[in-house]
Image (cartoon, rainbow, N blue to C red):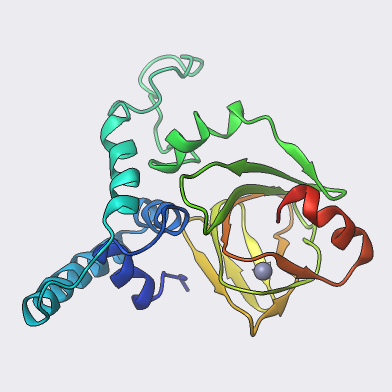
Length: 223
Ligand code: ZN
């Protein structure tokens, strides 16, 4: 079972009313999920029809523009720097980059170029800068089989899996899947066994941690 983005988010994205952090998560999900791309096209059509009904509805297109500019500015040929270890005829057969555009441009390369920072005892992270003041955006790298600290939310949290799997209760999220949590959710997701889980996490309010060490570290990590 796949986990897609909500209709609310898609409509807001298509309307250009999401701030940059949310737009980045939605655009990256769309890059990995053909079904959601199809729904986005439908959402855009619905939005267009709505706009014809409503006189001059104000929309903020600046955040979507910022994401689109990154897409336009990025070179089309992916993987141009990868060494030819495999030799003849196996040019990235099924080996697409872990970080698709537009995310890759924000990070400045694929995951092998990342200098991860420690986040707690086992997990690592890379904060990602955006131009908006609403969201906090980061890549997480959770070792296989390891949990993240138990936490609640003061706002919305989007988690987009890029490699490995993320397990939350009886739900499993794989590459391209997105999990949406809000104030009503308390959880402790963990990376599936084996492979590290790399995911993109976007929040608009600090998480609520139970553990004292996590709470002490929180201001330094801005999570
Ligand atoms: Zn959470």
